[in-house]
Amino acid sequence: MEGLSLFLTVFLALVIPIVMARLRVTTVPTAVAEIIVGILMGKSCLNLITQTSQLTFLSNLGVIVLMFLSGMEIDFDLLSPKKHTRARKSESGKQVKPMVVAAFAFGGVAVASVLLALGMKALGLFNDVALASIIFMTVALGVVIATLKEKEILGRPIGQTILLTAVMGEVIPLLLLTIYSTVNGGDARKLWLIILLFVAAIILLRRFKRPYLWFAKVTKATTQLDVRLAFFLIFALVTVAEQVGAENILGAFLAGVVMKLLEPTQATKDKLTSIGYGFFIPIFFIRTGVNLKLKLLFANPQALMLLPVLVICFFLAKLPVTLTYMRAFNKRNAFAGGFLTATTITIVLPTLQVARKLNAITATQSSAFILAAVIVCIACPIVFNSTFALTPEDKIKEKVVIFGLNAVTMTVYQDLHDSWYSVQVLTCRKEKYDTYKSKVKNLKLFPDRKLDTLEAAGAFDTDIFVATFTDDQANLEVGRAAKQAGVKRVIVSQGKVVADTVDQLREEGIELFAFNNLHGAMLRALIESPAVYRIITDTNNALYDVVVRNSAYTGRQLMDWDFVDQITVSRIRRGDKWISPHGSTVIEPGDELIYSGPWREADRIHQLLSRE
Image (cartoon, rainbow, N blue to C red; front, side, top):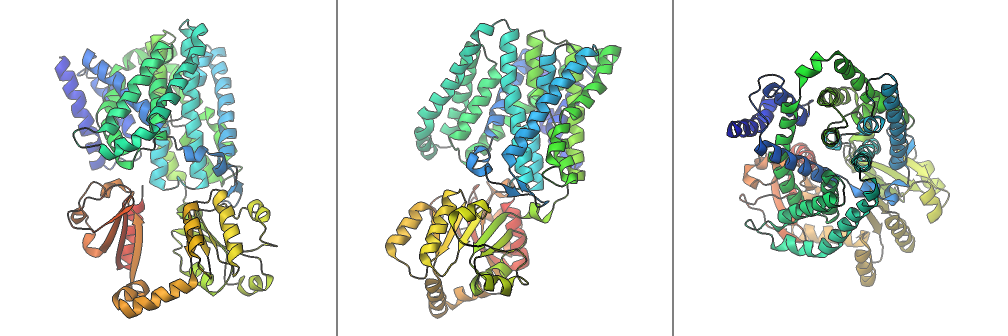
């Protein structure tokens, strides 16, 4: 019977996503579908899958891998003060600091969770205030990230704010759970030993930071050192966690954080995600459904009454998120974002697992919490997808600020793709402003070009900053200030190019644009390579540069792309090397393609390949 239960579990893990794809079920997370199928196949219904030692072991490993991958989901760039101390404009035109908004939102969640837990105790529904508070605070980070990626708003202010709220809703409850389990496990005096777990994580990070670069170079198909390192980190920190009295899931989560800080390649991330979500994690979710005792739940009136109360509490706990978001974003999207943060499943399950081990909760109460979390997890993405409305600002991929108004920048402003860029033009010259203000919708007049003035006015709150004054020295000063302010790409124009300046700017990560050199290069191309000149200036065809991020087109040969006959791929940049493309060339995540083709098709393909 043990072999049959394992076979059915693995078979269902294969079939569930296939059936969902065939039926085009996109609003329900796969994890929720796996729990529901587990309910049907387990104790509550057909009882075809039973609890076995093999399934228990694989399921326990599944929750550890799940927490590891959750740690890897955290984007530390979003947590950097430099990125979030500056305000960014939301779709409603308001200045938004994502970190500040997210912190206020989650602070409200924490207060609401405690109040709801106290209310449940007063009503006699559930007496453990601390445990209920932790559960109500949780947010399913993985589900939130997947939903935001689908909407392509991770890089927008509202997307960043929702994501940061979800990060807090995963990290903080996990830390609180560790304290809860230590205190309730009778080891309160050992609580300080948890510090040793964080010390171990720091030591591992420092020990493998430099060797990891070497690992990436020598990794082969038969060694896979990057994957071996990941599992070493998992078991090392899980072992330390258990020795100091912390929960193993905290150790696994910290292992994921360490792995993230080692800056693994996209290929490594894909391999680890494939191992986790391809095998171990589905077993954990299916077994969770199998072990639910819904018959006992429905036979117990008091426990059954707990179910609708829990569903309502999950939503009410995240009401402060919606109210906070409404002060920064339009009301429709604020409501959708707040609703999405009510999604909770990934931390709830491990929390209940810990509570069961501590005998802090009955099996029936645990089933009620899980079923409530499943209901919420089904409802939230559906409501978000049906409510959230993409605004023009949400759809824009990058924001460009051009400081300096002239004939060239006017042409650039008009020609930049409005589906990919939000362009703002700045000028200090009143006569230029009066001349062009009717032609340039997003034109702003500055009293001067002092760095303090620019910083205070949010001129450096952009993805690409371009300085095009007639004064070369002013361009350098402003460009360097923009780079120091954290702007991703800085481009400065120079009338006179000096070799030493070029080398220095390259070291500083600043790109150089020289009008005279450009005109000379175009004339040379017309004389020496007229075909190249025609490609660049052709209005019917486009020459594009795209970084491939869409996993549907990576790991495949170029000849296998369904649209490869519509474009011509000229060159591929992989890391620091350029390679010549062939039909058999396997495209890897992060490859940069230079291609040309009819502009409508080339435009569509650019959006398709760059989509994460």
